[in-house]
Image (cartoon, rainbow, N blue to C red; front, top):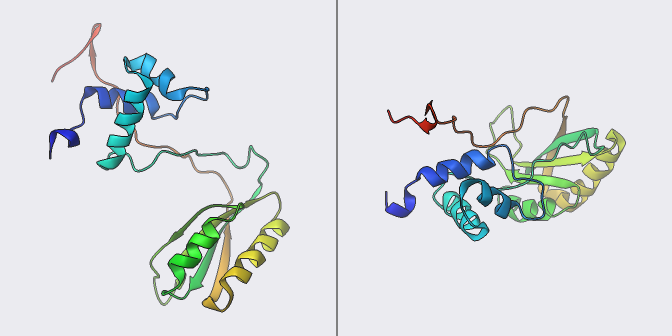
Length: 174
């Protein structure tokens, strides 16, 4: 591990400051930095370094689709030819109604699906229309598919660090 791979106390403070999400303000990095004594550029650079060394996988939004009016949410799973799955996955992932699309290994004989695409819509009929749109793109490269509809929202959280122990007004050292 090099010094650039070391996670220091400032990184821990940054993770704690962002573990419930970025502030919904015009300048979130500035606002985070104010709370931990960093400038916005330092916040951005540290988050990028933490991502580069694998401490943080990604930074992205986690919308509550139900609150946005999308009541029909389905994970579509597709059995696509292996030599075309990556190219087709990029095409499907670019569709405006697909929030995320990725390749997964098959688990034969019970699970032949290797391409997954999450679709959000206001009704199941709209999901059916969007499934037809995907099927037309995949064409003969797709052997079968299913749609697994969401029934409830699971709690979505990111990296969590425990709060530091305190001895009076200062952090404790173990």
